[in-house]
Length: 276
Image 1 (cartoon, rainbow, N blue to C red):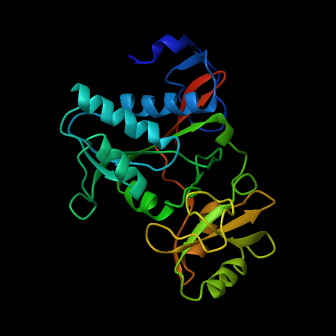
Image 2: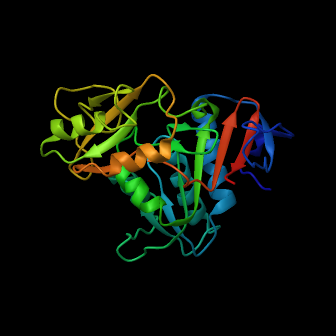
């Protein structure tokens, strides 16, 4: 397997984490440089090198890890290693990055079937369920990635968890109209009542830290409610269905049963874990 950044890696075997998942460490690498940004670049580049082929329609994710996958697509198009690629971005900022790299863009309106989508995640549980939306692009990410034949998730090992919820709030995109009412309805759901604290995201939609006084507004003109849990969510799939049924909810950040594979970078190496 050819890796353009091989000078920073030494090949070695690794043991698989999350042992109850069917996984295949396609390879593992001893990583000489282990800053978080370098890990993000490694998995972003590997995802493109392993899963993107000429002639494909590709979903481009949003966030600090997905940034490197987009960068790699642009590099390989420029070098001629990839040809006839069409891409669908999942946010305005990804669209702007892709345009700057000369990546041809389309939308779901003209291309509803994707060969592969590549994106990061805020948390990954042992069943490869995800929390996404820390960057505020959860609706566009989900509508694109659910249309892909393969959804490849790229993370560093800090994103692995035993259960979704406590380590990262679950974002829910809601319409601005009567948003306080919608927040109450979400908080009163059986899977949420007494278990989480709904908090309206303020300031920038691109992070879940309050950095302003006004409600954060997504690319779609909506608000985001972050659900803060103290204990792991017992049934993310059921919770997601309950939230989606609330009138006023656009989409939630639980991506359950969608992952084809998760590429994980850590100080001990890079491994690939596939869903059952």
